[in-house]
Length: 186
Figure (cartoon, helix red, strand yellow):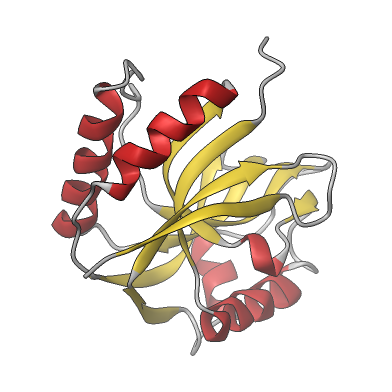
């Protein structure tokens, strides 16, 4: 395993929407049992996890990202969903409605990273905002629909995206993700 710092590329979530997501977390904490709840300043939509990156490669990644000429994205948060087993889901997240523009943008990022011999991810891309992870104990007794009903009235909103960031992961801190570089979408 590499000792290099870990990085990822992601879309930041504006403060007003982070506040909505914190309300979701506060409401849902009494119905689900997760060990880790994402800090509100860590909310993001991952575009690409890079893992351990040696310092000499980081500057080349920054240059490639700086050359991307994307346009603003208009995304829709469309309710709640889970990754993992139905009765003990490992991740709870705010679902991003499938949109061709974000898929095209992700493909553009992947193409730029391929130029640096960074392999493409094999699993299908599912844009989302993680709210909680690492199921603690017991079983989930409410359906996704029942949990969504708990947050009714605040479960769908639009996100206007005007930038993306390169983040460094600090696993030992409360706020784990720190912006290294920001890139504007014009």
